[in-house]
Image 1 (cartoon, rainbow, N blue to C red):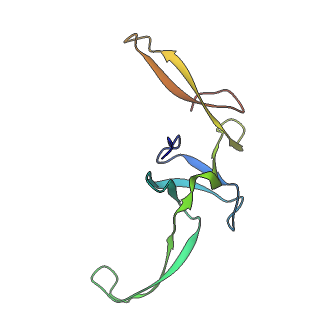
Image 2: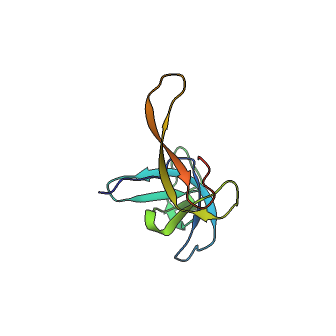
Image 3: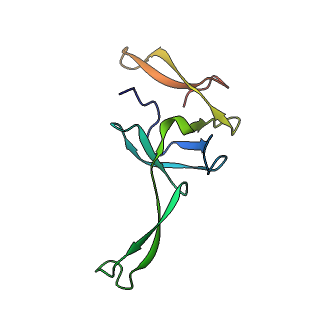
Length: 110
């Protein structure tokens, strides 16, 4: 299991697969399987029986998980995909060191 550098609500772009080029927000992260669910990407149809929340039943479109390697974080400055890096900074208030995520493309903090 590798370290996951993406976080919930990060904006990502799909770089491979059927939905290549589409963008969305991360809704959920599955650490064990290294997969994520991205809003509006990799939609699958599911047939459901009528129930309390959906009394009509029918066909529902739902996002399916995709692998982490198929997405790239969107750089806020350029608006394109970028790799992530880490930088050690010292917090001015507390004096503690912490690692922040930076964009490799623009060098800005995320």
